[in-house]
Length: 119
Image (cartoon, rainbow, N blue to C red; front, side):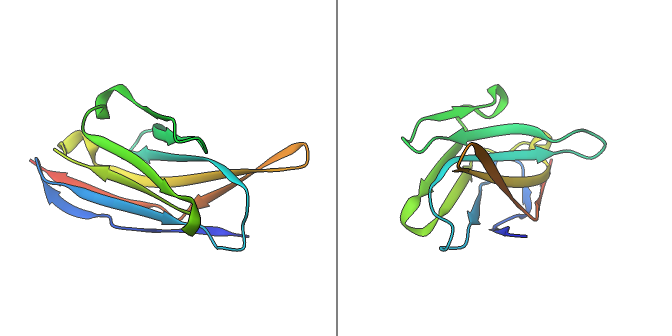
């Protein structure tokens, strides 16, 4: 099973920044959708941000203006720049990538990165 490789999580204070990265093996071609999710303790995984192959971005309301999602298709990598972090941003962040395979859509997931923002 192909696993995306995430990096960049950690412990920071409120107001600080973190940059998350997520890389897929270069052997995987045709990735179109790229998405970040997060899961706070005791809650379900929720969508945070997404970026299409055309570069269109969307953000969950609570992170708009603070988070920026981007991608580098030459390296099969995406990023999440998180600025002005708040304690409520804490959780495990998962990256997700999708590609088409015939009539199906294949999805790949990262292992999860813990982000802790102290007040």
